[in-house]
Image (cartoon, rainbow, N blue to C red; front, side, top):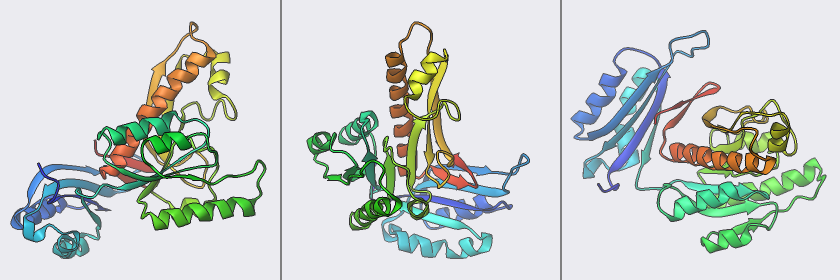
Length: 294
């Protein structure tokens, strides 16, 4: 099926009766074909937000196959329910900036998935504070931008480097950023600018085994379960809304190097899932949590 006339509609609003009927009815009356529809109302539990979330994948007739035209079609319904509504043309692949430091397993995995056509994004650039993976980026035909940071760089130097990143994001029309083991803490200013569109990956030992060589620390403690977490970046380090997690079992027969290898494999898979789901507009923010329509 051609993607030329296909769209994903995502919305959130206060939960109320008739939302699904209003959205599906409007699409039907406009001659659209619904391919897939999912919804969730966050009404249960002490921390419920009372919000309703919906994702609809549909095919529009040629005369309506334009995001601005479809947005106008939904304007009355948007106002009626107070919706935050977004329309995404599937013919346009989101543009992702990949950032990396000195561990390249996630970068290599993402670039391979893009090259093999299994990850629906475009990668216009790779940014790193080291040159280690310049050749890897070049082998995939992706421009590499070396933006170094000296050890112990002060806040002014860090912001200067980040401004170069921000200029690249604007110039390349970047939709979202992936920290593919980029081992620099982003400033609150950059976190705010990238709110809801920067994805990070880290091991799932937190709050245990912080600092250097977490897998070696876990090995020394005889850990039996290791994993990885992909989440949106916020100013609170490694505390952003979680998109995806996974785990793997380990035991006493494995070395610290084996622990690291298992952990890195899990990191690759978890980050790739999170990037895919974000690119396919399956992730909606619900306060400090994520609703993920798989």
